[in-house]
Image 1 (cartoon, one colour):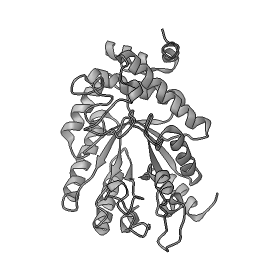
Image 2 (image 1 turned 180 degrees about the vertical axis):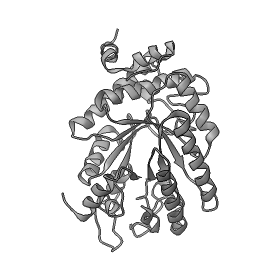
Image 3 (image 1 turned 90 degrees about the vertical axis):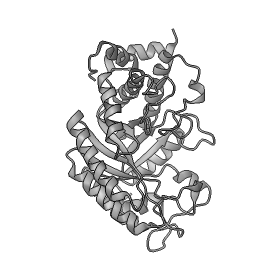
Image 4 (image 1 turned 90 degrees about the horizontal axis):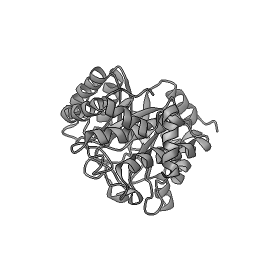
Amino acid sequence: MKLQTIACLLALYGLGGCTKSATVAETGNTPKLTTTTAVTAAVTAAASGFAYGSDVSWVTQMEASGYKFYNNSGVQQDLFTILAGKGINAIRLRVWVNPSGGWCNISDVVAKALRAKAAGMSILIDFHYSDTWADPGHQTKPAAWASLSFTDLMTTTYNYTLGALNTLKSNGITPTWVQTGNETSNGMLWPDGEASLNMKQFAWLVNCGYNATKAVFPSCKVIVHLANGYDNTVFRWLFDGLKANSGSWDICGMSLYPSASTWSSYDAECLTNMKDMVSRYGKQVMICEVGMPANDPTTAEAFLKDIIAKTKSVSGGLGVFYWEPESYNNWQGYTLGAFGSNGEPTAAMSAF
């Protein structure tokens, strides 16, 4: 037996590791398991308990490509200072296992997380469990994990999560939330964890991430994140499946990307879905990603104000995160940022 497998097995009896979750799922038992005005504003906002968030995982790559950021007075500043000044008190950072170029690997994540911490912000760590983008249409295993048996895949998922979070911990970073997978509307780590083919194996993989997180940060809340927060049918199907297979999670996470013409109806449906997640599963809810075309910042501001208010109105509504607002000038072909061509925040960021 491999040493890492032995370590996982030894850890699970005291800490609720990945293989324990698999065993429990089989039996049907539930597992037990610097001071600036901007920084001061972020700390004060964080104390309110609601996450006014941004995913800024591109920031280091943009900076390396020569991009600069400016406040609304045209003064160049660090992005985190600018965001704190707009009311952002939480930062979401994606983690890729072995990405081409190194961006969003654990070392890059640590560098960004230290900047978020210095700005007084809470941190959400988003494990994609892939070397690249994971979303409803792509849940590709890391290349180094591709030929693993399912048992070894569980062990590796647990140990990888454990190691990454211990790296954050050793650098003085304590995340408030951790996502076990990104937009896992049909599971993750395909084909083993493809929910429509094997919901039980998806639940076991979720438990590997959940239990590794709790082993390092017992008070950290674990998110299972799906796309299309307006689609209650998919959310019920996936979370019913997790529950039936003793999956463990604390927060139902959602993405929401409406257009200028659909945002009002999407927001209303998302509110209904959030309330249903709270009542049906007894879980909290969070909008982990939102975005809207950058060419209409006034409408984007109205959308954001509305979805923030709706999320705050839900008992258990924890926060709203704008996805990569700092992108501008067609960075990576992305057109849903919330900064203008001058590198300054648009009106959309005033919603926070």
